[in-house]
Amino acid sequence: MSDSIPPGFQPACKILIVDDEEAVGEFLSDALLNYAKDTRYEVRYANGGQAALKIANEFEPDVAIVDIKMQHMWGDELIRRFQSGEAHTPKDFIIFTGTDTQEFRKKAANAGYTFLTKTAGMEDVFDAVKKICIKHKLLEKI
Image (cartoon, rainbow, N blue to C red):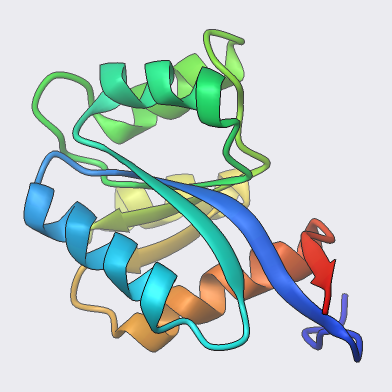
């Protein structure tokens, strides 16, 4: 897979951010909508797993950025529920968490998901989303 975008195209996808910390969700939303250069993203925020399942059926996200440790439903349970058909399943997931353990890193790697800690820079988040857009051909002609 090439990491480059064909001339005349830009990354374009629907992103669902799931985090029980509203400040984190709002920050990511704002950054993806306003600072990710040469992209066209639609972004929705859910403050937990139940809200994410509900939003996913209406929004039909391509990518979900999911926190692992959330109050009423952990991120790995949410992903399992997506994959069981409980709601529209995103094409790919980014694990975005403050909990950096080998167990979580290994689970993400085994599932083929990107793992980022909340200490990652926004360029790392932008790059991860861009790579997913390229991988799944989520590109828009400009």
